[in-house]
Amino acid sequence: MSQAEPKQRKLVSGASVPRFAAHVTFRFDAARDKWIVLAPERLFMPDEQAVAILKLADGSRSVDAIVDALAAVYSADRGEIAGDVIDIFQDMADKGVMTL
Amino acid sequence: MSPLDDRRSTTAPPFALLAEVTHRCPLQCPYCSNPLELERSSREMATADWLRVLGEAAALGVLQVHFSGGEPTARRDLAELIRHASQLGLYSNLITSGVLTAERQLADYVEAGLRHVQVSFQDADAGGGDRIAGLQGAHQKKLRFATMVRQAGLPLTLNLVVHRQNLDNLPHMIAMAESLDAGRIEIAHVQYYAWALANRDALLPSRAALDEATRVVEAARARLKGIMVIDYVVPDYHAVRPKSCMNGWGRQFINVMPSGTALPCHAAQILPGFEFPSVLRASLADIWYRSDAFNRFRGTDWMPEPCHSCERRELDWGGCRCQAFQLTGDATRTDPVCALAPDHGLVGAVRSAADGEVPAFVYRRFGADLAVR
Image (tube, rainbow over all chains, first blue to last red; front, side):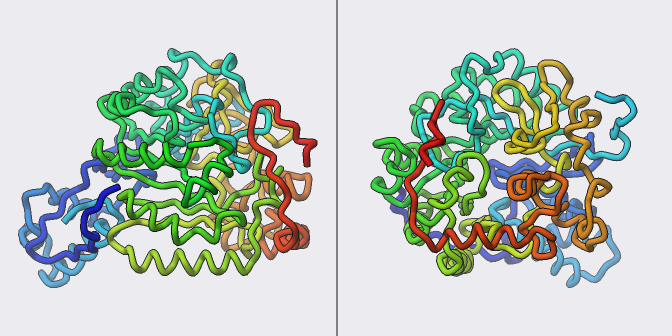
């Protein structure tokens, strides 16, 4: 049994660098023509907007950099984009699918 | 296989294959979901057949394969099957009791591409755990194996099946999962099929015990948010709406038994009037899109009232066909668990047993004498 100090929930900030956990696969599925997230006994099919965000989570970009990249492509307000981005990464981190 | 009923154009491919590679298991849990008539090792499919089934599954659009049983690690070719699944791009998951696997064997599975392990625990300690599993020393072996899984760098889910004989220990079981560094816990109240149905009165908790367990789960979820995911399956005899069994018949899952029989769910074999197809005689694609067995309760056309016009018909998909059959004798009836079902009264009679005496277990074993009840 591990005697490490108790784990704590991590919260997304602009400096967080989100990436998929080692045991999670994010890939395109040709049979369904959709991007999918394969996780332990779970499967997510993110919508188009979420896919655009998740594709930028390559383990080197920070949340701020991801928001900048999206703001350069989409015409939406930067604050609005940042809200969506943080929501998605927090949700994925809480599900154990991503690390921050 | 009727060429007249080919649902290829209207049916999505399955997400997951549940590969029940063997019914052999050193445990004797009295709520085992395997059929009462267990398939002996002589009926198990050969390695080559399983390799072909995995290939057909990937081609059909399956994304995840759950290696299960019985105890899947009892098969010597499991690493080979995992390797093939990985090469096909399938996400492979091992559902195990954890009592048979040595460190080297686990290393072979990891090297073959295994992505995740689910280990069952029967209770929070060896006294309860070994008694419920019907195997001395099982609990200690499980603790050791779960630790090995984390040391090998694999994510770990603890599967905790709960019932009236271990429900009081739920807080201790959750603490055990934390100390084992599990990323996820599946707390599943026993579902009453097969061996669990034979042991129903020994397992079904009272409403008060259920409510207390639900409170414990909700508190743990709040405390462990972002640290551990807790999935919770409630016993549907206490529910007012039926579970979305398998998320709909022939919608997401395909189950293959040790002998190669393909089922829409692991309990479906009890239903009379079916000829379940075998992967030894038909392709998985033909079975999924064209077999009567998979088409019979697919979608909503087959539904009786009040299901057919119900606004929840595509949420719970009419509940569970096996439960309808077990409680009413007719698999096409509305699942009696639903408060809107004409047969809902049948469930009340079952529930009342939960406040009565606790009968002895009938343990799962080959050739068990069910007359013991």
